[in-house]
Image (cartoon, rainbow, N blue to C red; front, side, top):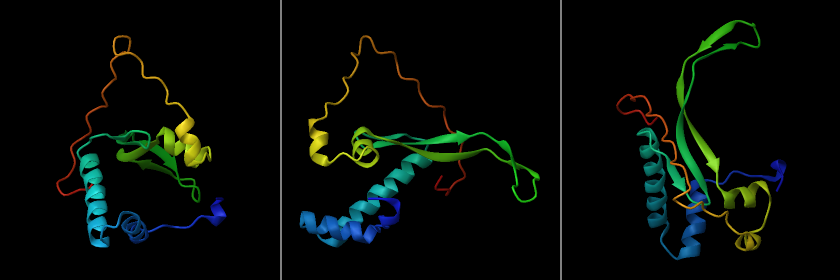
Amino acid sequence: MTESQSRTITKRELVNRIAEETDLTKVAVRDVIQSFLDSIVDELSQGNRLEFREFGVFEVRERAARLAQNPKTLEKVEVPAKRVVKFKVGRVMRQRVCDEIGPDEIEATPAPAEPSSEAAAPRPQPPTPPPTKPGSPF
C-alpha cells in the first residue's frame, strides 16, 4: 500500500476488529487495549525500556540542547534539552512493513542466532533519565 492509499485506523476500529476475531466484548477489548497503552506510558515516564520481541523496542532518550535557526528570519534560537520517545522496529515488523514480506514468508525466515552467553559481552545499561515533574506523562 502506498502513502496515497494509506488510511488512519482508530482505536475504535481496532477494538471492533479484535472483538470480532476473538469473540470478546468490545468493552473488554477496549479496556485491555487502554490498560496496555496506559502501561506503556507509565513505564516510559519512569525511564524504563519496553521490549516486545519481534515487534520493537520503546525507550526514552535525552535530546541535547542545541542552537537552531528560524528559517523565516534566520534568527538563532536556543532549543532546550528534552526527553523523547524512540521506537526501534523489530524483525517481524520490519519484514512485513518495510521489506513488504507477507506473513507466510516470515515463518520461513530463520531468526538470527543468539550469541552464546559465555562469549557475549554484557549489554550496556541506558543512562538514568532525569527526574520528571509529578503528574507529567513524560
